[in-house]
Amino acid sequence: MRPTIVHLIDDTKLGGVNLALESLASSKLQYLFSFKLIYRQFNFCLFKRYHADAIVIHAAASWRKLPAFLALKLANIGTPILYQEHHYSREFVCHCVQVPSRFALMLKLTYALMNKVLLVSRSQRDWLLELNIVAKNKLALVGQGKELGAFALLPHKPISKPLKLLAYGRLSQQKGFDLLVKAMAKLPPEQVKLSIAGEGEARAELAMLAKGLSHVEFVGEVQDVPQFLASGDLVIIPSRWEPFGLTCIEAIAAGKAVIAANVDGLADQLSTLASSPSSQALTEQKTEALHTQASAYILLEELSVAGIETAIKQVINGESLQVTAEQRHGCLQVWHAVLNHWQKLLKSVVPPS
Image 1 (cartoon, rainbow, N blue to C red):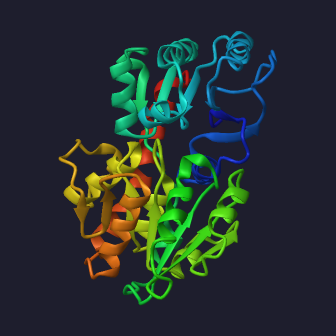
Image 2: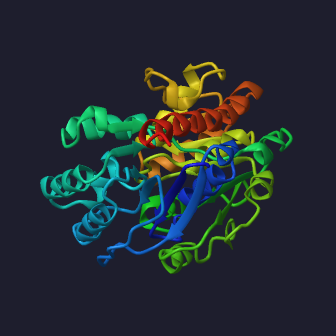
């Protein structure tokens, strides 16, 4: 019988995370493991034992959730419990944490309950090692990704005039769309257009910022992301923090150049894209010197309205951006590497039958 791997998810709105887990559950690994995706809350204690050979938690750690994590541990003694860190990164702390030492203690206590802590990017791993709150041998860099075949099928499209920018994701403070809309207010409508896809708590604020801007539109949730990407020239990702950033790898796989913030997992992905051959996956690369510009992207030197405006003007004024076939293929290989990491990890923690 296949070992049963239970994934516990506490937020149905985690678009990229849920897409990645759905891809994992339907991947070739389904023939080796029986994956079960279960949505449950961790804001209260539930002493429930799961029929599982391993449990993987996908929930943002907090002081409030610590008792629930402990209850899960006690109710499932003998079952390996893994925790995938999708949520936190160095830049998250810079933007959202008032007392970093208290936050680090909360993470330390959470990770102490887990058999393994799974990481989505090199920058995240380096940050946690610097904090010295978890043993190095407890960390496992599995990366992040999804099946990107539909993105890779999109034909090459030369950049048009006016420039058509695309941005998508949860409309929240994290994604930095407020900075993007403010930058668009400084750019001429006859030279650039912007479509923003997604929903979220910042929707009303963003709509107010875009009031009177004929070259900015909100298209709501999109079910067919490849089709959305086919409609534009370039993807812009002005995130304030991004442990991984699935949008980036989707865009490159679709043949779309990107303008991205120089933060966390975004910087990891793009520096590797610029310096490494496509035959190796992003999650397996050594860190290379970071370039501020490459043929497939512009990495923002400053995450600000002015910085975004300057980057967009570079493209309007003829900056050459083009994703190569090799780079697109390299993005497809990332998913294969992620699956290999998962397979190796799960075989190492699941007791032999």
